[in-house]
Image (cartoon, rainbow, N blue to C red; front, top):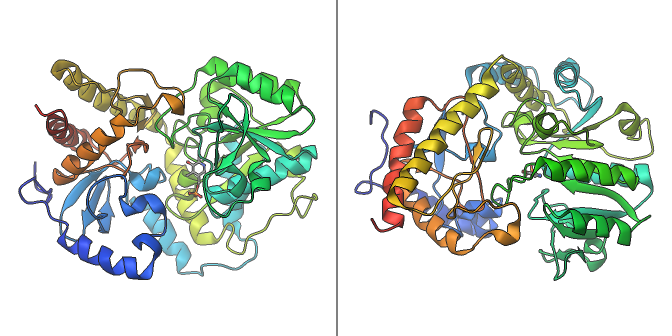
Length: 441
Ligand SMILES: *Cc1c(COP(=O)(O)O)cnc(C)c1O
């Protein structure tokens, strides 16, 4: 089985990673270009990777890992999928950017719109954050209103007015969670708890006539996996429609992940605007926002809502996205991903049950969240920080055994089409051994 050079607790080393990290810290704030990468919530220096293939990562110290981070989700086909690589290589050889339309635009446009019943037109941008930022501007442009309602525990990228948390009380103005955000920006955002119909209704009533949109991750997966009840999402749709407020589904993580039509398709709910990112770029920097023709025709140059981008829909990124989405349209792929993930989480759950470990593995399609409780968690205030200390131990023990999780207990795991039953069996047995250490058995 161990034909790949997986580490063991006796052989594991981060010598080269540690050295590179020391140098990186002299160049970049915290040594990184995105904060979670610095491993602040787990132990030791970040692992520096040299290569990925299928579901495996290979670090600079020559060790292999089964990857459950998958670039935070984009790599639903695993690393260097042959069709994706081939299409990207062919495309890149013909030029990387023309700041002009290319035939690729139409290819990916047709592919997405022909296979997604909840959108009629789409605009490509270069990140999930940019997609959300543009969707908010569009919602404000369409409604002429300025306030936004968001849910505590949903992440929407680093958009100024959405980097906020709730104050005390059920319906509150956002309190900025980052320096550099003017209070007046944060005050445009109203924060309510997830799953709370009453709080949502009272926010809409209290700010009637001022709210442009409600934004939600329909499958919140950036702060644990806080699976919502379908009735709540249906209520959200109804109550926003009743108030003439637009509903934005931020499907940057759930889009093309829980099915080609994402959470909209899964729950059968028609939002007004959907944002995409991650999978839609197949590993390249891509985001997109999409809606009905009527709403999208408010965007420049047709409509008055300005939005632009030098590298938007550049052919190389579109090639990666197109190749990835083409694979995802093959019959059975989502069923297989989900079945694999269910078998994997069921095995881990059975082990924890047998050993009496207080853990559960909530799952949505091929997303799962190892969490140190047996309670069903649907809102962020129900997450117990004590579990994060246990995650810290689990993360290190898993690393030492060749299993790579994203470096925070608030992050979810992803399974790709490249994870084989063998890989998952190997990973599960290593996770089980790690949990024995965590729980001191
Ligand atoms: C990842 C993510 C974003 C931000 O996307 P970036 O490409 O990192 O800017 C926004 N919303 C959701 C739901 C996400 O998962």
